[in-house]
Amino acid sequence: MNKIILIFLLITSSIFVYGQENSWSLQKCVSVALENNIDVKIKQLQIAKAQKTYTHPLLDILPSVGLSGNHTYNFGSTIDPSTNNRVSSDIQYDNFNLNANMNILDFNNLANSQKNKIGIDLAKADKKVIEYEYKLQLLEKYFDALFSQELVKIQKEQLQNTTFNLNRIQKEVEIGNKPQSDLYDIQLSFSQDEKRLMEAEQLFETQKLQLFQLMNFKIENLSEIVLEIYLAKEIETENSEAFQNPKIEYADLAYKSSKKDVAILRSANLPSLSGFYNWSTFYSTPINQPKNNIASFENQFNDNKNQQVGLQMNIPVFNGFRRNRQIIASKIESEKVKLVSEQEKIKIEQQVELETTRKKQYLQLTTNLENTLKYAKESFKTTQSKFTNGKIDAVIYTSVKNQLLTSEYDFLKNNLQLQYASLKINLIKTNEL
Image (cartoon, rainbow, N blue to C red; front, side):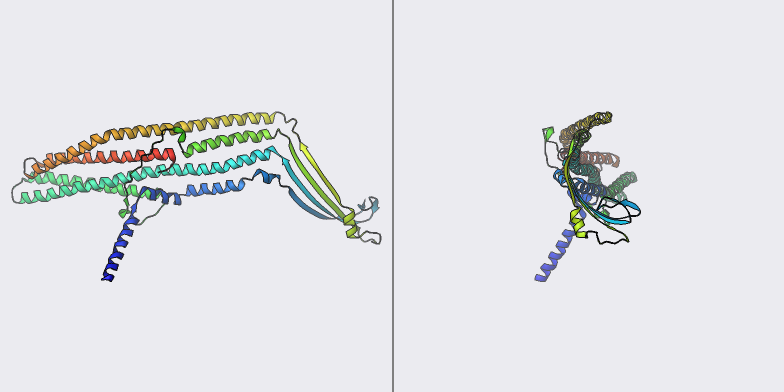
């Protein structure tokens, strides 16, 4: 008994898992798509690059230290470094230098560091923009396929009803209760329903393929994939300043970055202060000559040591007005970027206003379409009864049936458009689905 229960549970769980694999929600599609999107991966690398490019201003103060040494041969008449006298001999000597430089105050480095820091946020915002536009495409493709999926269900119900009537009319024609013309009419209706169902299934298959191609995700059992109907949460943001659209964020950061370009150019007109330290020594000895009077390496190394320490200030005085013209041009560019930022905000607000208007229109149609569908169903029931009793012909029956199909189509389309508009508004406002 326990084995039977265990086998039953295993079969049930396998069916459930199989169903879960073939059922795709909007969130699942978005999650898989973002993981596979190449553009998103490229933007992630750009973020990593921007993070490596940025250097904290305090690190720019750290000195740069260098150690150098060289071994030199002088041939002929030269100056002996140990006596500073000209001698007619060949000398070899070694120089050792230790240099350290430190930027104490450099406005150019400070401005560049601030710009690079903004560059990190700019790269992150750019990635968000790519994801946002990608999600908009996914949302549209998902609802296109979802509408076709639900339309297929309606077409199947219509064909099932027509099949029932076709079989009934065939039997009545065979026993002589119906004329042959009624059979031709119902066969025509059946053929048209078959054609509509086939077209709806083909469209659904094509749109599913387009959806998964956009997701950059290959799937083998495409015909078995079922899309889940998504009920959007009603999130209304009255204050436009609360928008968290990545395009607005990117435009604001681009404006901040352009102002730092002006600061970088201005820094060239500001003084800079640096400190330096130098330590050096040398050792020399004649070549192919007696070395009796030559001091040892240790003595020369210690005696010839020299140290320098100091501060250096650089004050720009005149650059031919070239820098001023560059600053003015950079200011103009910054103002242009500011206008682009304001324009982006206007576009987002207008887009939300448009989608909100559409949503209100869909809501206004809901009651009317719901009543129309209700009346169409009641009318079809009555017509079906009349057709069964032979009171009306197949042409009138087909006309009423098509009216029901149109009513179901309009009601379905309006409901899905309402959900689509709600999701799109939330995505534009908060960058969330």
